[in-house]
Length: 170
Image 1 (cartoon, rainbow, N blue to C red):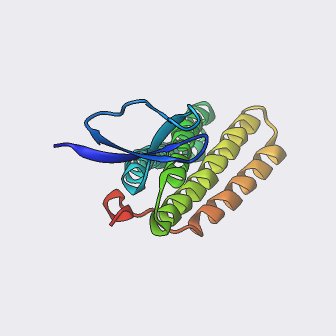
Image 2 (cartoon, rainbow, N blue to C red):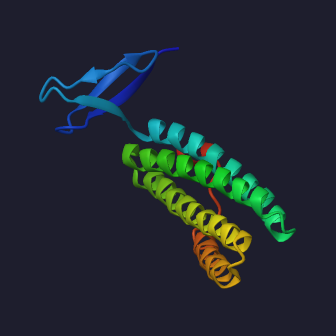
């Protein structure tokens, strides 16, 4: 099945419709800059990947929290670091989705996801710091870091739940 994708020049903003399979490199005939895929279908694909990374980040955070609460600081810190990497990747994909979205409703869903994932990324970074401070015996700093993490977790809740990928472009 052949598809038609929209590409937008990163230089001058000219749009091109490209039919066929794959993802070719499109060079703008106006300013000779590379055009990148654009549109709600592209945003939906980026959102889908970002959400998968986000879900994995949440899973790793839950596992790390369990270790943190049971005093396994080194394992918890490794888990928080892994979660931070997943959230960072998800933010990258959500950011690409926001910039590629054509409609306001798709852009809003992707932006909300980007903000929530950013809050969680920041929270696990703080929690990783709390584990390190705990390992060093610096309980005051560990407490401050954990409180900062809790503030970011509360901020993340304000963005609600992420919508299912198939609902983003409906």
